[in-house]
Amino acid sequence: MVIMILLALISTGLFVSTKMDEWKLGREASESLRLVYSAQRMYLADNPTVSVSSLTPALIIPYLPNQAAALPTIKSLTGSTLTIVVTAMPPVVSTNTGLTYDPSNCATDSLWDVGP
Image (cartoon, rainbow, N blue to C red; front, side, top):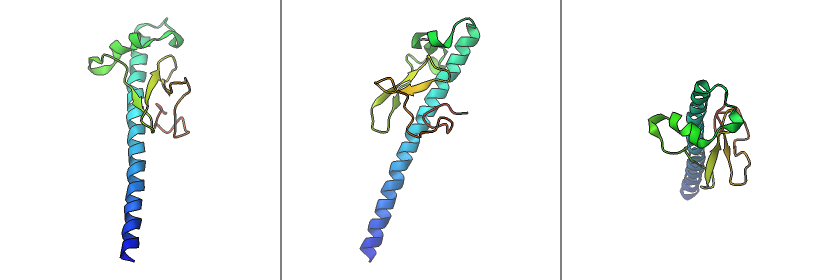
């Protein structure tokens, strides 16, 4: 009986730990997207005639905080590196195949996206 209870507690702890790691990845992704979104808005405020579709990372990078040398990258739930698309407003996370990545399946939950 005691062994069964211990196994149940261990499996519950592992499940919670995995979900917590997924939440942390989503939170880090949304923070990175917010930084890029803020840089986009600052660049567009300085250059009001430029369209969002013509933005490039080279134009946005000088507006990132802490004199960043490159756009932040994001890790997926499987550990692959994802990129941020700056030609969308607000910016989105993109897979290597060009699809928008949001495992939370909600564009307004502020995980894996900028949110409201």
